[in-house]
Image 1: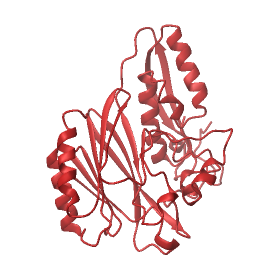
Image 2: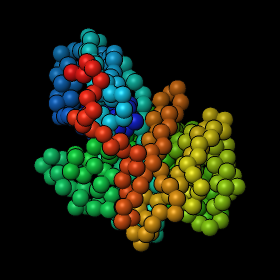
Image 3: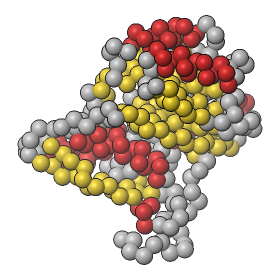
Image 4: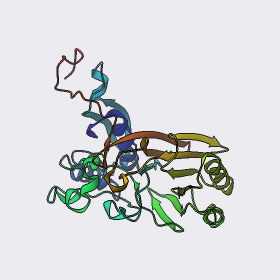
Length: 318
């Protein structure tokens, strides 16, 4: 299944894959970060054609489990059986939220939310050609393995917009909000209006302005949580660090730093992406630290060791 990623990324990707398999969701399977999505889609269709639509993931393992030190190239394994009967939906929605883009670099990444990341073996250089600034982070040259495998991707977002999707049967709304003082009332109104429809309601606020200090960020997060958001992401490049707090049933996350550094300069502080998984039981969040080289992002906490490096792996590795 997920392959050649650090273990936190593998586990994030497998949440979408497992949900799609159990739900027999043919729309989501082609976007799974597996080897290969085509074979997984074909096998699932064949099982459905034989009346075995009740899929169950009964076990999961990581190659990382066999090593006493972190490795960069974990591969995960999902153990699935298909049983007679109809599919039993397994609702889960995964989101990858990237930090803010500075003015003038909007072309470095997709300008609208993406429902799936596209990698095609027939055009393996597509990401390097279209988005060279973020190609290293995507995993270009390695099947875009970091970016593949999520339900939603949030890069550059026009403020003041409302988006709706049905993902695996779950109704998802996204409200985008600018960072000026006058933008917040419209944002809270948009959240309140979407609450009756959405099962997962996400607000993303771009807070690059000078007036977005800690108190302002806290107030904005609280206002959007009270309006009904399940997840509030405050993309605040000048924030001192990545923060997460709960308010009622809402999760409020501060994402500091930039996706791409202004003018290719040096980073003033840390940058983080957010891997979020929603299920009816709640949200699970993982902050992924980014580094920069010549202003371009990469995964900062990627382990140095590979599974084939000495010292010898733990005894018993297949």
